[in-house]
Image 1: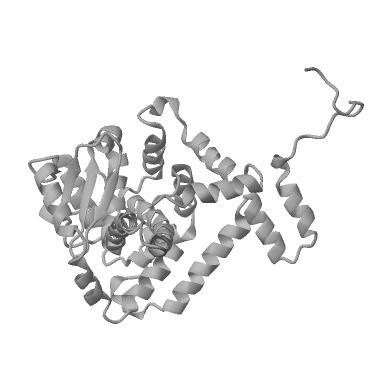
Image 2: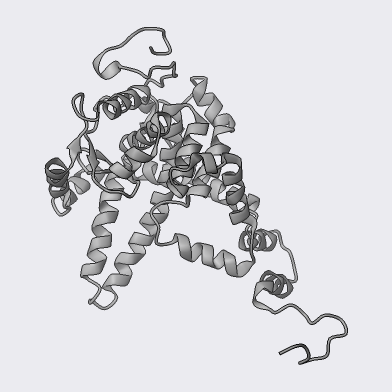
Length: 361
């Protein structure tokens, strides 16, 4: 039954419990500012669709479709019907009229993705289906439908193609460096798009605890009785604030090759958004509509993106980010601040009264 109290059939079937629907919702309502600014700019480019349709001939999209059709199970009313219902529910709630095909593929690793240029397809692994309960899985399906609605599948497909291309041109001088520079930028973009899709999953499931449980299970497996959401979120805070400048550098190096943010970070970001005024306004029915997307300002979107990054730096407890904030604020004693930031590199001073070189063997 929908939020208007009426039963629906076919594509308009809705979840068993009452959930709010968002007719005509623009993806700008839930997209992370950094993700939104890039998408708004690309949608404004003249000939953008033509270029990508031409590019689609170079990408292995048709091959991927045939691969999943021939070697996976297509979700339908007769196969994985509970996932089929969730897919219809998610498309109904986010008002996505063309339901993307969905496949279940044999893979013990919990994973899901949305790929494709002309027509996106959603793929979930058996490991994920077996790991999550109904409400947790509903958030994941909503996450992937959010990717489809935003057009993220286009950029994921290009990222997969470029990553493969980088391996093939590694022998060409500087060729691999050029490709990897683009891949690195796309990965940063895609990490932000994952935060956008997490928000879409919350709009579909409308159960923040279920979204948190799903992320926690992806990190720690199906041992929910051994885990605690609050403790899991505390890990994200410890990750953000702990260590010295050396750890800050290691965090950057660890995340660069990843297409997804770390799970504790995703959980913390989603909780923060769920508690924000932006989320509450959407739930109250106040959100931008798709019909207004053509009027979206590129410059305004970039300003919002820059403000978001600046806010992240300002509020971060990470030692490197705190140093950047201090320097931006005109703080002096740069050398002293850097030395104090790298305390982890130095051995602790000898205790008072200890002779140099003394102590036990």
